[in-house]
Image 1: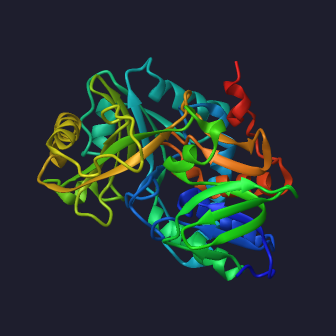
Image 2: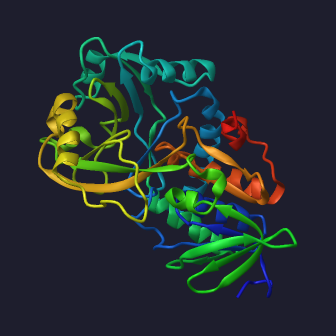
Image 3: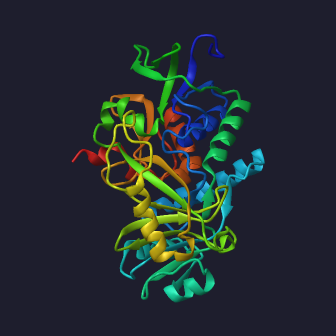
Length: 381
């Protein structure tokens, strides 16, 4: 039963990367919080898994993300200190491509505008410093020493533990069926196990968000994604202390990757893997030979020493907005409902600060964080 005896202050739908952080920030403010998760905590059915997730201060997507990533770093460090979990690891980051490409130029611009320490390297200089790389001649790379990775499973568990310690109730394996506004301005949530009332609600259900809010129709579209791990010839070359995380634009597409960690293999993925829009309740979750071929080919071309035997393949989901920027807002017709959606394959690194933002929106309807570019009304035109 709710700790107040009748209703919660806030119910959070989804306890993955964003929802777990939101539950923590709400509970840390002394609110009565219920987190509802359809699967396990953590789980591998959505977007908040994969063993390692890139974090980087250089942000080619848009310089407006920089204030948020700065706060995210501080909060990840706080979570690691509070829980003793290895939540964040700094390896350095490489953003590379032809000199006039956004991956390089956008990252350089963000560093210059925000005075972020960085170096500009030629492809030859990258290989000399980090022998696992074999980038095309004439490519340029931005190296930023604070880049690295967040461990998503540890991050989710850490946020849930700290939320519970602050009084939050988290229920896994409980599927939300529907919700409705109540006449007093709150919400009622029906699950396959019960019904809960709350003053406010946060939608943080990832690829399932669109099934809970008409306002997100066509604006938060799930996409099938596949990741690969391949065993290097010399694993030491691809250990975290020797191999920065990376983003790379090449003729085959835009790819990203990480060093060996917890799986005996170099990790690689492609943005918009095979452009497969999916229903999160009905899609092919088993990687196939074509998925592996796509990732192995690029590994062999640009990281040839890493193109050994396959160690692991895994699926996850992107949930894409039309402009591939986040959606952070309250619902237009239901201001008591905050929503975090459309993270478009680059959101997990921000989960710590997004939890803070969604807590602000749920409690106050606004936040001091700069989120104007993430509002829902940008799609009204």
